[in-house]
Length: 247
Ligand code: SF4
Ligand code: SF4
Image 1 (tube, rainbow, N blue to C red):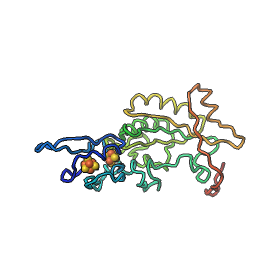
Image 2 (cartoon, helix red, strand yellow):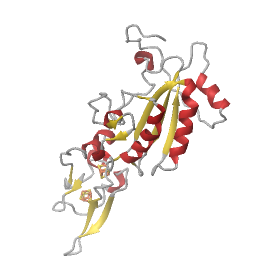
Image 3 (cartoon, rainbow, N blue to C red):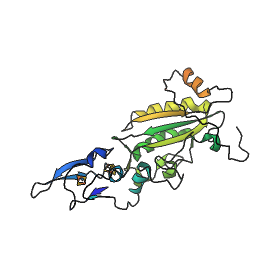
Image 4 (cartoon, helix red, strand yellow):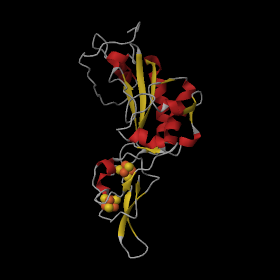
């Protein structure tokens, strides 16, 4: 996002809408008139300021973003759909649609690392740090996640070099693994957590079994790990759409 200096009158009305806090007051060199300026390196192209329709002079402008800058908008603007997954925002549905997608089968868990949030955001080099600590464990990176499509080398977890400096509002590294492997994956994430230059949270995603047990919960208790439960409840409107899918 940019502010057209020929149009900005420095009213500041756009600033409160920016979730990254990257719109600042500045001064013209001549005349001393106050204007606003966007720190384009911190801006994630979410377009919240534009959609707020707060600018009285139409000074906010979103120029077409070329690669690799274009990844900012696709991960941060909830109105843009990822071409890989057809899902907007972070581009993944995780367990929300599991009753029709069956991504998380019995005996498997999803382990995800969520990076960034409003104000902080996340650079994609932090996502690479997570990928690189998980890749040697030969885990399966979720194909229906747009970050996975940015991998240059799934065997090492290296991302495409040109996206590493790009900043997004948030993103999520997703893996699916047999529950027996969950503890070692969580241990690996513990090791990398201190290297992440943003907020970093770990999700352990599990279906509830037919007998209402949650094996992942038992594993967390055995491992003496702290956790906060969060349920996504499907009410049975969906029907499994994968032919021949096992449980
Ligand atoms: S596009 Fe988003 S991050 Fe960039 S200045 Fe506007 S509100 Fe802030
Ligand atoms: S709302 Fe428009 S005129 Fe006011 S500071 Fe922002 S860009 Fe400038």
